Image 1: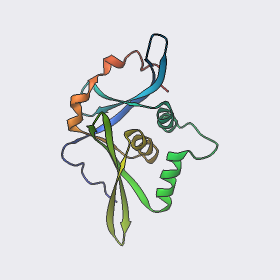
Image 2: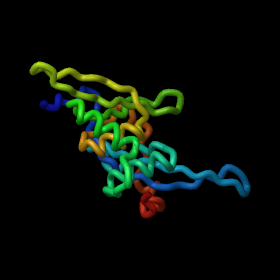
Image 3: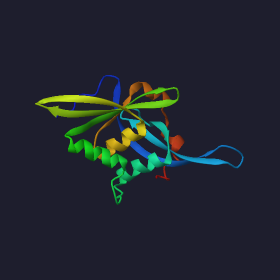
Image 4: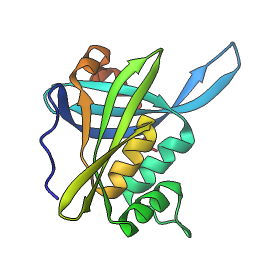
Length: 163
């Protein structure tokens, strides 16, 4: 299967990393989460921060750093099942920010009788990235999301605290 050129309006992205963060929700109350930083290849020093749960961040980090688990985790299982069915994760796209929620699509490709059939699956960005990293699939960002990008330097204090 040959990867189709990326659709107009998207830029190839790299996962800068996932980082644990602490939110202050009161005088003495804190909540814990994570941020996933993605950078468009033509975004310079700008990154798109997507706030995710600690569990989702750990799932991505396990794939990035090749941390073994005793049994397949959910994203490993999904990629394994797709492979067993002859379906390839072609790419994932982070598409939009709607009502403060990022949307993403996992693009699957399957060759049937010499023709490639594509399936487009709505997904959370964290699941999409976790699957893309495991499958070795590229990640693309909608160019419209650049307006939500922030200076990478804003995150300099947390980038040493990778999950």
